Length: 138
Ligand code: FAD
Image (tube, rainbow, N blue to C red):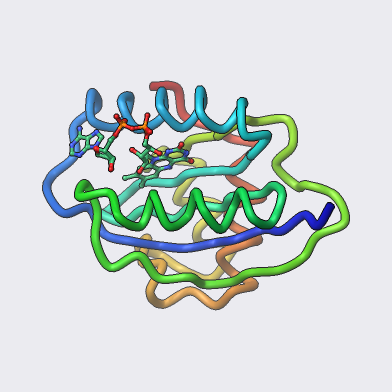
């Protein structure tokens, strides 16, 4: 079995409230635990940044479904790598938004404003890994 990690970003197609985000996370958490996919989702400044880790075909298919979701647009893959061990294993789908620690870790990773379009692959991954340790409750 080949494990992969896919990282993409996208932009909300309309303004998102807490209940929209709850809906997305509820679906993600229940589907992903069945699919044995884990990851991390960040939302701030109308941008989503998400890592998905799991079996290669499962992640590929899930990404196509997610990219098709009308709640966001312009889904762009930042990186796609084979991995030995999942990084986000403990969280079925972690979530983080614009808290103080969010911006602290963003600065540590070279940005002052959350703009995944301007992130390198390494910055995005490092930020997602850091954020997995400082999640937001929804
Ligand atoms: P349903 O939830 O019944 O959805 C059927 C269709 O309707 C899908 O095409 C969906 O895109 C669309 N849809 C659902 N709810 C709404 C709504 N409120 N407004 C407009 N259209 C809607 N799903 C996961 O399984 N795992 C993830 O990690 C994951 N991450 C996501 C990240 C983002 C940024 C977004 C926007 C969505 C994410 N989703 C995730 C949801 C995913 O796009 C699909 O909704 C989900 O996989 C389909 O679930 P379902 O088969 O139960 O169908």
